[in-house]
Length: 116
Image 1 (cartoon, rainbow, N blue to C red):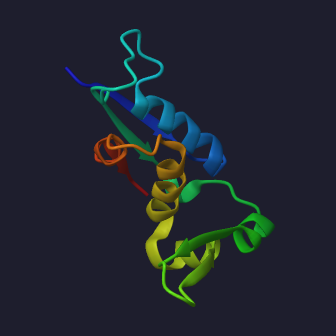
Image 2 (cartoon, rainbow, N blue to C red; image 1 turned 90 degrees about the horizontal axis):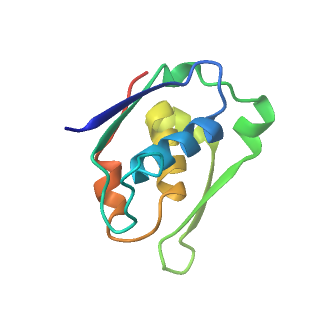
């Protein structure tokens, strides 16, 4: 039986919601937490578009990517990511970075649903 979490993001900052979701996806708040297994949880973020974010955080925060090729370094602001992928893309980026970088991370990300 999967444990279902519904997290309301309205009026809260992106980082605080993302850290709460990351802990839930890892199963750290469950009594039977095991680090080498994916927790049997389902996490849903509702009202993602009502997240609170300051103007400076929107335009000055940079997310970096590198393709490995010469000249392949790209930087994008939160506003640019919101324009392309919406709040769901911004939340996925934040939560993905907060999960451990091992073979379980993609499996944990599949258990996340984001609704505007």
